[in-house]
Amino acid sequence: MASRGKTETSKLKQNLEEQLDRLMQQLQDLEECREELDADEYEETKKETLEQLSEFNDSLKKIMSGNMTLVDELSGMQLAIQAAISQAFKTPEVIRLFAKKQPGQLRTRLAEMDRDLMVGKLGRDLYTRQKVEILTALRKLGEKVLALDGIRC
Image (cartoon, rainbow, N blue to C red; front, side, top):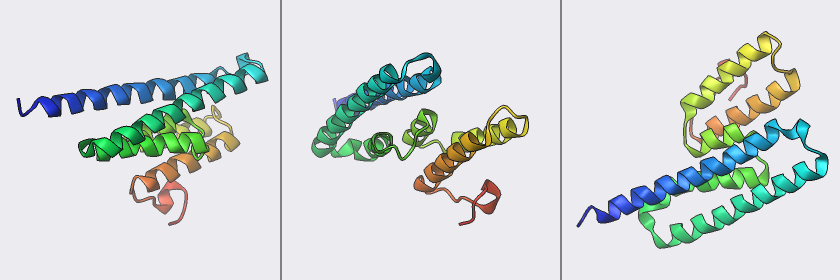
């Protein structure tokens, strides 16, 4: 009976992570299909998704105020949602990896972008914007960002 609370906490955390993943995937899909949508449809869909993120954030606040065992796990998700809403990060993939606290995968994505830039698969402007996002996410996760990563600290 003592483990019952842990099981429910784990299930709640899993459900919240899945909901966050679904919303982040929705944002990523929207960005990937941007060319296929007219401007109004894109803006309305993005607005609806950000509203859903805002509602999700409100739910997290309520949960966090009533259940202290979830605070640490939910704080990362809440930061990711706030970043998405405030547009601090514009790339859904970066938001997702930040929310899941996956600096290794952020660094892997950075290496992939370096390669894509070298072979001409990624434009310089997009590369620079996404690199800044990834390096910012790494720093917010408490990771050291070295001059080798492209900026001086």
